[in-house]
Amino acid sequence: MSYVLGTYARTAKDNFVKGKGCYLYTDKGEKYLDFVQGIAVNALGHNHEHLVKTMKSQADKPWHISNLFLIQEQEKFAKRLCELTKFESVGFQNSGAEATELAIKAAVKYFYSIGKPEKNRILCINSSFHGRTIATISAGNNLKHTEGFPILPNFDHFDFGNHEQLKDKITEKTCAILVEPILGESGVKVIPEHCLKGLRELCDEKGILLICDEIQCGYYRSGKFFAHQYADIKPDIVPFAKAVAGGYPSGGCLFIKKVADCMKVGTHGSTFAGSPMAMGLANAVLDVMLKQGFDKHILQISKYFFDQLNKTQNKFPKIVKEIRGKGLMVGIQFFEEPSKFLNEFYKNKLITVKASDNVIRILPPLNVKKEEIDEGINIITKTLQK
Ligand SMILES: Cc1ncc(COP(=O)(O)O)c(C=O)c1O
Image (tube, rainbow, N blue to C red; front, side):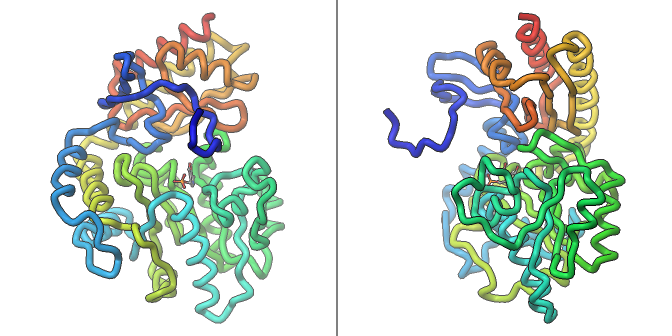
């Protein structure tokens, strides 16, 4: 019997006691190929040397001093991240849901601050995912997550890909459009580049803000630092989290100047956000990711992975409906509900995770090697052959 709140369907009860790169090891010495990595969190794999070293050295410094004081690691990371992404300001949070909450608050606050308080509605995609707080489940509008909860009234929704509905739903009260450039939990659905461009144009035309939730698809998961960069656009607000500190809880939101300017002392805050440990690790993640060739590797290995997966689909056309995704954010869509495949992959020592739309998601570390991709493909093929 467990005292832990029963809100999770655990894949298995194995006790993982060691992790290295692509692999997890149980207390019984069994080795698993981890193609989930804490749901796109451990972008550099388990226990990356540079992160372990950073954490150990941070442990000797003050762990927590709160945002009442200047945090050097935070200042350093904020400068690096803003210079890299060409945003003017960044606010820190501890998780993805909090990061999206901050994005929502800032969008509404911006219009309030310019004397348009009636502009306080956010337009989102039906059954998307932005977190589990009241505001973020209201944004996602997925009955699985909202049922029985008091959802906020300030959200409107359109169906993925329905341009007419999108335009119809914009009113005088709309302040922002919020989308994931690649929808993760909803089934690894990529918003085409021309649609992202169109969204930017539409927001400019209507004088509203564009928020791109890069919590799952950001941080090179798609092959570019942010997935929206494929469309060569700049959103106004970008929440990010997951991979930021390589496995340590952290997140935040990037802002263009006019939005950042409306967030004044006391407008928002968090006890833990941007702690020395989180920010030390966030800097360490950037140290590794910004080394020459890091992104090139992702694009090369992704191409190889998709080629192999497409061959697999051709071998099993009655089982696999579609291979989707971008970079190392990969979805295998099945014709039927895929739990049995997920369980069989696991029995064969491959860790994957489900998404909506009959999809199994594959999120290997971004430094995954060709041999590890081959190992994963072999397990998938062997499993589907049965
Ligand atoms: C796109 C997106 N936004 C927000 C979240 C929420 O992040 P967290 O679980 O850290 O609150 C997630 C988590 O999966 C996500 O994928």
